[in-house]
Image 1 (cartoon, rainbow, N blue to C red):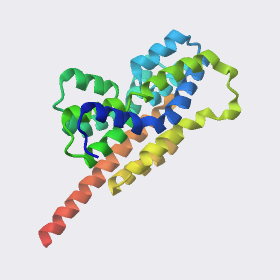
Image 2 (tube, one colour; image 1 turned 180 degrees about the horizontal axis):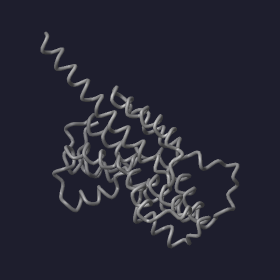
Image 3 (cartoon, one colour; image 1 turned 90 degrees about the horizontal axis):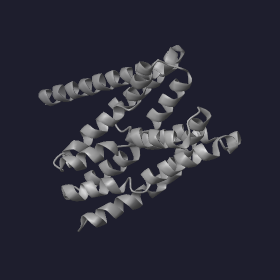
Amino acid sequence: MPFTTTKSAFWKGFRDSAPFILVSGPFGLLFGVLAAEAGLIVPEAFAFSMAVFAGSAQFTALQLMQENAPVFIVLISALAVNLRVAMYSASLTPYLGSAPLWQRALAAYLTVDQAYALSIVQFESEPKMTVPQRMAYFFGTNGLVAPVWMIATVTGVMVGSQIPASWGLDFVLPLAFLAMIGPMLRTAAHLAACFAAIVTALFAVVLPYNLGLIVAGLVGMMVGAQVELWLERRKLATEAVQ
């Protein structure tokens, strides 16, 4: 559906993101509970979520902090978990790169999995959207999810250990990532990177401080890049023969 105003684009992003509150709500609640168990009080947990606003990186950092890992390891591990955001940013640049600097800076802060997944699909399906409309849509995808995440974080800290373990909130994290990543595995390079990272992570699980995650991510990226290069060369060779 073509957009006529930036306002309509914003509300389209807002509506499209609504199902993701079923993920961000329990996810934020779980982070709040774990933060309380780690000794964080409400203002500290809220500041953590506001400053980082990246669930997987927050969980990684919190776990390593509980294990008394060196600060350097905590920072590197959290950064490694969020390396995918750099790829998201590169993918969004052709669509949002000409927006004003302050909008791009705010968009960089708000670039999370659901915002990217929804936005890239929308921008590809509606190529006639203007840059202001694209930016409005992007902000709309966080108009509901971000507040729910913050509220759930505070709620989780306040209720703390009162949530029974039988609820299985810790299972929300892998489900959320499977739901978002699964549809994105569309090429051989994607699949190769995914399975290479999985296999590496299984063997590297013995490494301390969750360093296996960093190793697996690096291996996955290298394998994916090599497969993509191989496929490109094969395509060029085939075209040359024809």
